Image 1 (cartoon, rainbow, N blue to C red):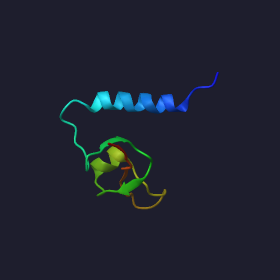
Image 2: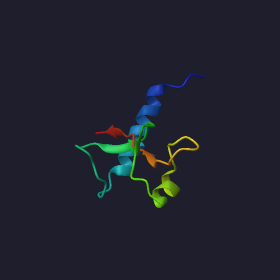
Image 3: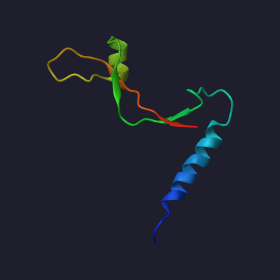
Length: 75
């Protein structure tokens, strides 16, 4: 049986609209942040940040805290 890929897209949009329709969600230029794509950014390196986010450094080098920030937007 073949599945219509458009159906998944429409279900995704329907459920996200229902989830985010309640007040209190921040938007960026009218868009809601819904998912991450894998990009990252270095952040200030502290003991707490290293414990929470981990390091992007190679073994044997000074640790550098980093976190994923990538976002998909939906209007």
